[in-house]
Image 1 (spheres, rainbow, N blue to C red):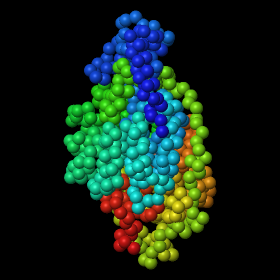
Image 2: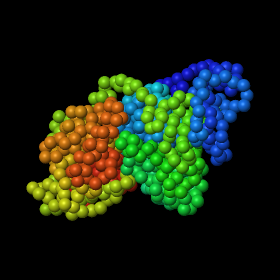
Image 3: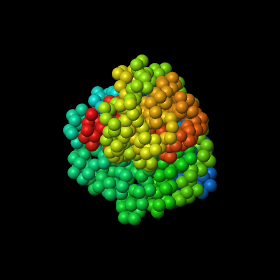
Image 4: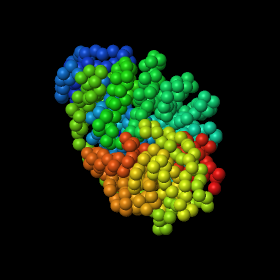
Length: 595
C-alpha cells in the first residue's frame, strides 16, 4: 500500500527544496491566485491578498518580492477559505465509487475526506480494503484513512465476509495515508477486550489517534470509555450528550448525514450556551448521493450552523483547521499558509457557503457547481461477485412459529431522523401457528439474510416505522455486516426481493405482489454502483419514490433500512443470527417469554 504521496524520502526532500526555491523566487511558480480576501484561520481575520502556488502547495502569502509565475488567476475579490473536510465518513454509503463521488462532492468544496472504510472491509476483508484504498492517489480530494477497527463489528453475533484483526491493523496503520484507528464502539472497550486494546496501543505507538463511537453512554460509562484514550465521538444526539463528552476530553464531531440529523439540536445548544467551539468538528458519517447533490456536503453543515447563529469563521474552522489539527495533518491541510496543499474554496462571502471555484493542490477541480471529470478505474471481478444466497433459501425462512393464539413481541421502533431505535412490546396475533404482520398498526416483518454463502442463516424480527401498506423493500447495504436486510408485509415478496439482489449482486430493491417495482444495482461489494453519479442519483430518487408509493414516509428509506441491522446502536439490532439486545451485546428472543 502506497503512502499518501507515493514517494520515497529522497523525493520528499527534493520536493521541499523546490518549494523553498519557489518561495524565494529562484524558480518559477505555477500559479498566483490574486485579488482575493484570505481567511486566516489562526487569527480569525480576513485580509486582502494573494497566494503563490507551486507543485500543488502554497509557497507564499502576499509575496512582495521578485518572483516568476506561469499563470495568474484573478480571484475577483472572492473570499478564499481552506478546502472543507469531512472528519468521519464511510464513502461506501454514498453508493458511489470514490471516483464517481468526486462529481458531487468537490463542487461543494470538500477537498479532504477522513475515511473509515469498514464497509468494504466487512465484505471483502484486507483484499477489498487495499483495492479500495489504492484509488486514493488519483482523486481530486485527499483520502485520509481511519483504519477499520471492528471488522466484524459484533463477533459471534453476525456473519461477515472479511476480518481485520490486530495484524492487519498493524500493517495499515504504518501507511502515511492512515491518520487514526477507526471508530470503536463501547462493547469493545467497556468489557476490556484485549484484541481491541491491542489495536489502540498499535495506533498510539504509530503516533495516530483513536476514533470513538460512544453512543448512548451515561456519565459512568463515558468515564470508563474515555479511560481507554478514545479521542472523539460523532454520536451525540443532544446538546447535553455533546457537553458530557467534551468535559471528559472527547472531542465532538457534529454529524449531518441522510438519517443522522444532528446539526440542528447541537448547534442550537452551542449558540444558546455560547459553548467554545475549539474542540468541535463536522462530519457526515453516512450520506446518500442524492442528499449530497441537493443539500451539499460539509458545506451543508457549515451553512446550517451559520443560519442557526454560529459565527461563520467558527463554523468554517470546524470544517478545516480544527479537523486537520485533531488528526495531526495540519502541516498538510487546513489553512491557507505556506507548505500546505493549495486546497482552496472561493466564496462570494462568509455567510454564503456555495463555492464559486474549488482548487485541489492548485488545480481548479470545480467551478460554478460543476466538477472536472475523473476517470473510473476498473475493479477486480471478485469484488463484483460477493452475493451468494444459500441453495436452500426459501420463503419459509421468514416464518415465525408459535403454539399460541398471540405473542408478546419485541418491536424495533425507528426514528425518522436518527439511527438509534427503541424497543416496545406489542401483542401480535397468530394465523396457522405463525405470527403475522399487522399492517394497520405498522408492525411489519424484518429479516436479515446471510449473503456470503457461508451458512444460510436468516434472522427475523418485527419493526415499526416503515409503514409499508404492501410489498417489501430490501438492501444489501446493512451495517456493518452487509447481509441482505428486508422489511415487508409478506414472506413471498421479501423472498423475491432477496433473490433479485442476488441476481444483480447487491443493491436496493422494491417488490409488491410478486413483481419487482424498482432496482438500484450496487455490484461493487454489494455497496457501490459503477455508474456515474448522475445516473445513481436518478435511480436512487426513483426507488425512494417507489418506497414512498408503497407507504413508507421516511425521507431516506433505504438509509434507514441499512441501520436497523446494526448490532451496536441502541436499543435493538438484527443480524442473520437473530435479534440483538445492544446494551447487553447478546442475542435476545423475539417473544418476551424467550421462546
